[in-house]
Image 1 (tube, rainbow, N blue to C red):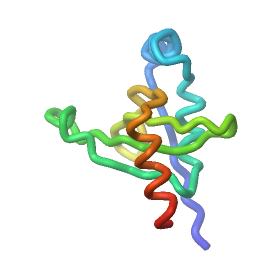
Image 2: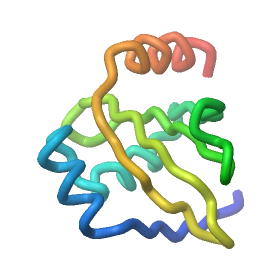
Image 3: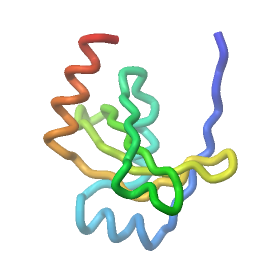
Image 4: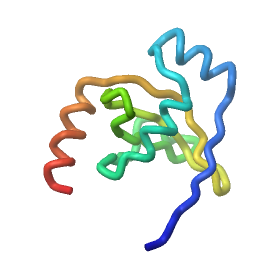
Length: 98
């Protein structure tokens, strides 16, 4: 069994904006990545300058978070996170398959 260590980074001001707008911290976003049933998608709409992705995963409160992020060097840079109903249904559909 291999253990993968992932380092996360984010802009603190962007996190504060995210908390005000969506009610979730980026620490919660990191927690969503720990969900083994999580789903990764490519964010084609925002991938002009750099490739961006979505991660949809469940956190300890039971909420399904959608995290938008990019990869820089060997780190995951969190851009934002929120609860999106359309992604919640996608998560449950994918979880049936896993």
